[in-house]
Length: 537
Image 1 (tube, rainbow, N blue to C red):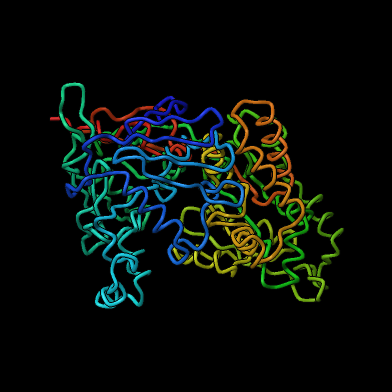
Image 2 (tube, helix red, strand yellow):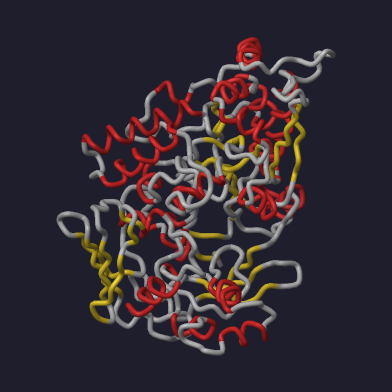
């Protein structure tokens, strides 16, 4: 994705082209390209990923929607060493965008020469090898060695990125060194990247992070947002820290989404949460302007959790839907549902007579919002306790269907991502799903989980129509508009506001951006060509 946030350019591919019906995509690799360990990077690595990872049900129990065509997975075949053909049963006009985000969609290729030793298809002793590394099965060992996410632990895993992970120190800091076989060169023929090494510093305390910037220990911040409330502090210390502070645009539909578990294990809570009147009431009970003043010094824009204004089928009412602070109307809706107050007028009661009490789970970034929201919900009789937990545990509890309500990032909603990821935010398919058992139902074609509501199935059907339509066409705009309308009205996630992103760049970095968009939908720093940044002097 280029800095204009619209254009796409080949990266590890030399080029690609689509058939007229957008069912077949032909990918051309760069001749002579190598993995970071010097081994050839070829079409075999794409086929290995497809046949032995994506289609292996032990490794991939559920295939991502972006690699499906109707109810069938796409097919990947080798034409020659540098040519790969991808076929879909139905038109897929958005596959180029999917490829542009492939590093976050399991990347479509894997180093066969390295990973096959842990795969039972290629090694009869794979289980024994796994046990020698303290894994119970080859599947667990393979997943460990194949993990190229932020959680990567294998420092020998080859990659084709500008830098590769080479060590993890005792503090959890990750050390990256330049890939000696990285494919790109500058106009003068110098191999990129310019910077020889990077350290991703693990900082678990926001105050410590601020002090590290001021003491010149950090050069820039990663994807976790710097608090807008600390913007004046960062500016005040620009000279001491030898850095500049910038405010970048933010493509998130919201800085935080708050969702109620639509498939809760408690049948009484599930019935309450699935009633849209409850979600409307909880939205009206949030004083977003107060949160904006306390957490953002008024710099944020109050809005609902829905598509951003930049989306071509956005309508003005969507961002304002049920965002007014109206305690009287919130109470009226809860009364209408039969959720009466107890005798002491302290908490509302459930239909079974028990007090209506819930836990709002969050990790560090979203707990300041959650603490305020918990107080506001308790004020209308829904006794809410905030619980701060570690992010990995938060995800595990969500996926296990164990949570009541949870605060989460609300991104993956800008138009390129809606297209690339088949509107994943609208589907209950993300790791922060608003309905874990609906996700299971969709992933197993109804064999497991719980059947989603009629409204949710309508949203998914519209998602499929939208994903198969030519971008900008009448069918695309109609399906997208109906999908966004229905999703917004359902209030599966309640939003608070959107604030600019605080960006800090050390003065010693050259070629770094000073303005633009910084968002997960555009893969944060990717449009700004980090492989061309350099250290001055």
